[in-house]
Length: 129
Image 1 (cartoon, helix red, strand yellow):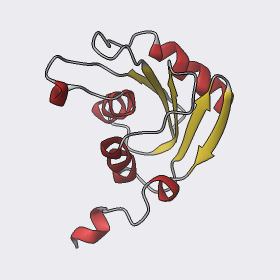
Image 2: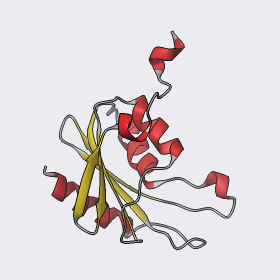
Image 3: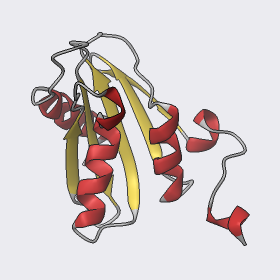
Image 4: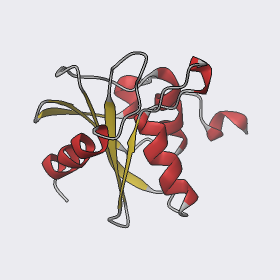
């Protein structure tokens, strides 16, 4: 799957966002190393602490299916601007590897980042030893 196709999948997932409070829709598409794609959208709850981001939705769906090795994740939003993962999502991404490409799209133009670009000096399993 190309990164452009992954961005398209993220836009498709964004259509399912539940955002009655912010009206800020986000979609994500996660490509596993086995070639499967998992999508996610953001889901807002009146108690904002219970809200879940699109990136984590996609990752948690993949992990719950037994997938733990990821190649890339594409992130898009209804803002029509580049929307980067929040800090919590960055921490979840790094949990599954530093070699995951993070594709940030504005409409269908995209940029590719590493987790070290977005979360330098991250705290990982290695730090717990």
